[in-house]
Image 1 (tube, rainbow, N blue to C red):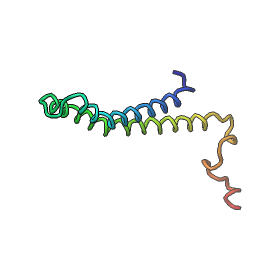
Image 2: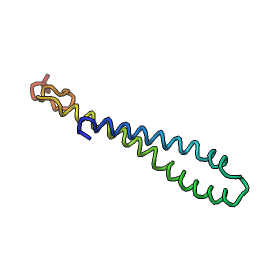
Image 3: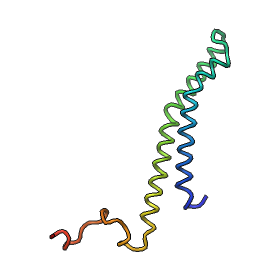
Amino acid sequence: MSTESMPRTVIWWGVAITLAGSLLVATAPHALTAWWGVNTAEWSAATAVFEVVLAIARTTLAPLGAALIAAGLVMLYVDRRLRGDRIADRPHRWRFPSAEEAER
């Protein structure tokens, strides 16, 4: 992976993790009841395991995906800021005004 493609790759991984986590949380309970009979011993054991998996997925996948998306956007922004050849090419809002500009 090159440094030019890294921000986009991180953003897409964030989107994929967020969507996969959302699909897991939304469909796992329905898949569980469709797979096992509701009143069997296997169902209660599977429910306990899936509840743990879903609790972990709820607390980690969406924030992890959002953090990866934000990190990719920050990488794009920093890369764009560093690409300028001269200081004059950069946006002026990030520098302190000179003494002449401050007196005006």
